Image (cartoon, rainbow, N blue to C red; front, top):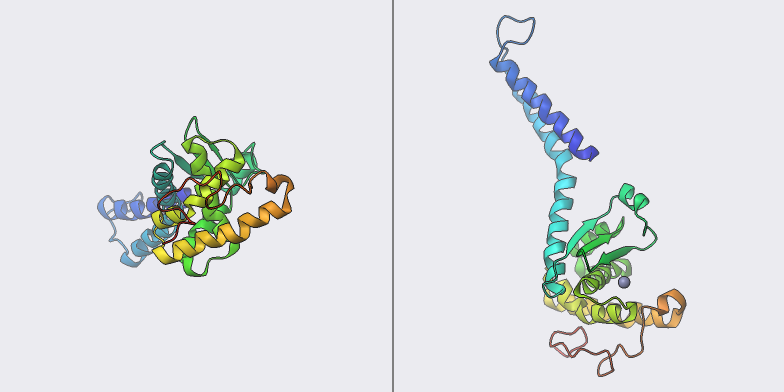
Length: 222
Ligand SMILES: [Zn+2]
């Protein structure tokens, strides 16, 4: 919001300058010529301040379209919380949450940024960046209709490969990233137990009860 206000302020500066060249400003007899360098500066600043919100809107739109696809056309609307949104969010302790009734997915600060970072360099993804991919797939599975956390997470691990490809990650990298999440982070959940254990099942494995036998499953042979 502050970014938009700053951007509008500089647009107003530009407007004032242009108006001054058409209508004589108060106290002057003639309009004064526009200063081109001043105009370039204020338009430039307006664009710089407009960029972060525009970029976030675009990213939310992209995630909404892809989440809807993952949720098999249950309409999803993704919102990236700012720090302020997160502080006011009753579920601020959850890094993300989803409501299948409204289709709304909320990703807390700073997880949208982490997911953006992952998509910039998927070939050298950190564990945290892979977590952000799984979080996106996991919340999409809630929109698809599953609310049991262990089943939701298992649906997500099988689709992380699909999700990464939908977000533009090259095929081989997407497969490697999705398998790494399953083999490392997911298995760790089972070992840690407690809260993390609620998101784990030993039946979430190739050929076991929770295997959906997707043709493009993370664990399907290529
Ligand atoms: Zn969940």
